[in-house]
Image (cartoon, rainbow, N blue to C red; front, top):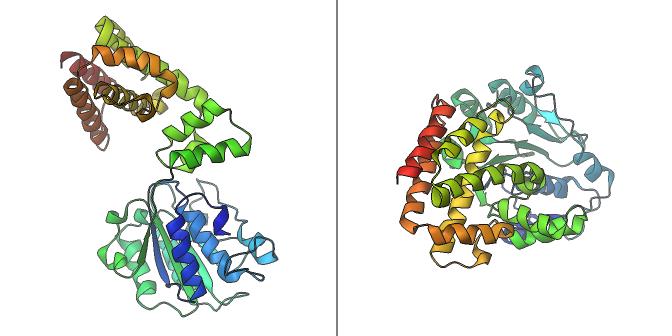
Length: 345
């Protein structure tokens, strides 16, 4: 049922109208930030069309078809051969194409093309969800075009992406697009509280850090985040209060040691968030405008020592460094350079 999904109420209205009018497009593109629920909406739409006991054109979530549609066994990440095929749920008319590492294999799209031409086994139609559709290379994209250009009347394709610009224009032109908005922080906080697994302060912080993504909120390790945030607070204190470059260089070394190496970009994300919070306070924003509200006292002290223009330059430097991750960047040298650049501005 769409009602159980969080946020994007306008999308729910559109999908319900499509179902009521029996005018669901055969090719739909679900666009929005990562982990805002795009795949869940696509699956719920497919379930509504295979459900044996739907109510008001929505899936009942109770019949055998609904229950089987929800059950899918994902292949092991290193099993390349398994990723060359459409991966079906326990319902034989609902399948998915899932990227192998960072690419959707052309063999998987060819498998989809073959399966899309088969008649449904149980339902009135077959449904195929392509996760991270932007990860198709040219060969995979061109193979998909064959199915998009001449879809079988009983086949529906749902493409999921956070990067629609990475798709071929010929693919975009053959799909009707549904654009998903970030989920409001209050909605995410209420959802986390309703689960009973999070204290009030934890739920609030996770919701603020999620950037509108329920998936990100659920996956985040708050204990680890708070440890990393403490290190980045010390960086800002060294820059704005103590002016201690030795601490900056030591921190740059620490975030590059073996235990932190995989979390390097997380440190950078946290630093950027903290700088933005301090910048917001220097511009007169209240505590409700910042993400790290539980650190508001420390952030206010930093804001009193900071200059808005200087902070804006820091944000630009961090963003530039983030763009350089696309190339082979020595992260230790980059961290040293970033901190020294921030100290000199």
